[in-house]
Amino acid sequence: MAYDEQNIFARIIRGELPAIKLYEDDQVIAFMDIMPQADGHALVIPKVPAVTLLDLPPEAAAYTIQIVQKVAQAIEKALDAKGIVLMQLSGEAAGQTVPHVHFHLIPSSIHQLGRHAAQMGDQEKIKTLAEKIKAQL
Image (cartoon, rainbow, N blue to C red; front, side, top):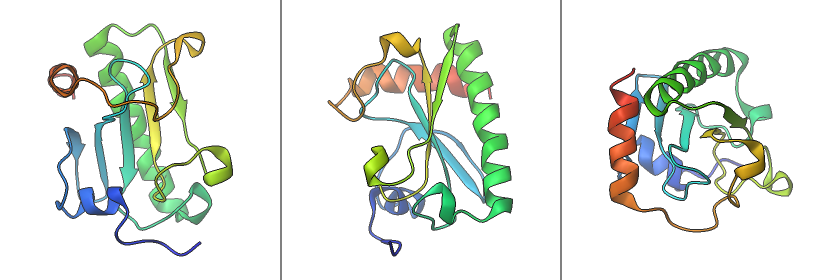
């Protein structure tokens, strides 16, 4: 599948759409999921245009997973999370809803997860949780 430069994450990377950012550098951005499966649900995405994990260059994949770990540690500390589900859905058949590779960090028990991308979350609550997580980065 060809990369769509107008996908929502590409537009967030370019600053065309807002995001509740947790972390950003020249290669990666981390932000809160606005349709969270649990409180504190965050996304980490590389800035490289890649649809799935299989399209991501190895160097970008290695760097991105380092930031995934950093953000997960911040979530764990900020929210006193007892567990974090790391999820990466590659391809529409696997449940990927945005055609830009991304990693979900969901502070939750796998048995308590809400349905993926099912409903919009409370934006003020999401912003409050983001501030707690950013304080730990």
